[in-house]
Length: 467
Ligand SMILES: Cc1cc2nc3c(=O)[nH]c(=O)nc-3n(C[C@H](O)[C@H](O)[C@H](O)COP(=O)(O)OP(=O)(O)OC[C@H]3O[C@@H](n4cnc5c(N)ncnc54)[C@H](O)[C@@H]3O)c2cc1C
Image 1 (cartoon, rainbow, N blue to C red):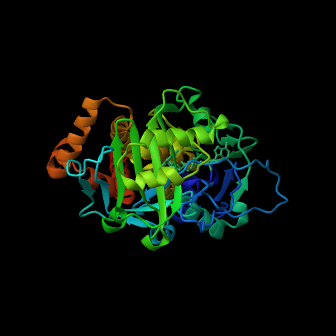
Image 2: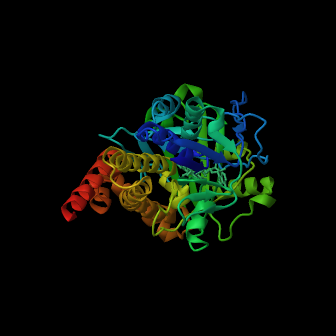
Image 3: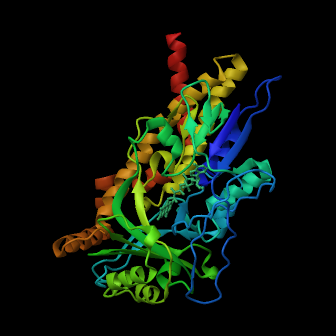
């Protein structure tokens, strides 16, 4: 099969690695599978940590992939500035050996900590959601030069060589015939791993499922400074809710690296225009927003940081399917989640593993017993992939949307209710379990191998019975 992946983010690079690992080789004399990634943006060098104690790292593109030979024709574009983001990575779906590498350079998070509200009422709001009994998460700075995207990118380079990634913007995509089409190139399978503004999704659905602005925007960055005690002692991320927004901070590296990230989320009725960003005005808004918040760490951060981007957040509405006729969507292209979920990277990894396992299963059947064609295998795998993944991702999206409501502006009464609720579930965690079930269990115990195996076995039995 000839496979083209559009996008060298986490979704694209991990799809490359999982397909390479799991797909069975076609029987002789067929040619081996070929996989090529097209990426519109060349990587920039990773930022080096600033020697100054409070200077933030400039947000960077997070996919330091190997260069291709300079003779290859491609359009050079100035790399986009990417939003500050981190990824919380359980590592369960990372293609090896990326998982171990990512875990080693991240900060193991064992609790989401809400030690106080914006007003500083410590005693009333002291909540930890520990991940007892679960592997927990590892927090890495995607844009601080480490993380899943970078790690998978390196692995693609070492497996596929320089030619595995071609730096070219794909301007057209098509399906519906015998093959997916990318610009003027065609392939048996085109994977749209091209993010929230996916052109492959547009090809599949037209303008009907365009991204939606959530009404929230965020700014943030990284600071090289000693970590607050609450972060180190409890191995936690510290969250503070207030009437006019949300502030979070934590570590994106092992404690001794002093690599702290912070972010501020707030309501904005109109989509902030990133092209005409007035950095001084945005910094003043940040300071005004959090001026009276009592946590000294927050006060320290807002006084000293600088930044040059603002991130309106966009999500994709649920889609009726995630691919057909040789086109498949993976990652943000089919389900850009609210950043509040902290699950975008992990879900992209789970997608790529699930799709690869399902395709491997049906291709093996096709090659071993002559059961159908490669195209049949592809269609069957695409259906299983959607069936298995969509409900899980949808549940995470709904939970995150609910949480997003607590980051929007609210009146005094709502603020008190929110603090009261946080206090209550902190003191009586069973209330949360009663309301939402075992959220951590569902999040961390999901295993693509098991779910795919069960689903394809059921389908195989059904089709054998029908025959
Ligand atoms: C502000 C913010 C905070 C976030 N915080 C978190 C977090 O804490 N934890 C978490 O897990 N996730 C977080 N996310 C989400 C996470 O970053 C994404 O879910 C994840 O990066 C999705 O990866 P992807 O590969 O699907 O898409 P992307 O990372 O967007 O990659 C898509 C790639 O496709 C390329 N591309 C696009 N169009 C074309 C084209 N036509 N031709 C060629 N190439 C193309 C792009 O250049 C890009 O490299 C956050 C997102 C935002 C915006």
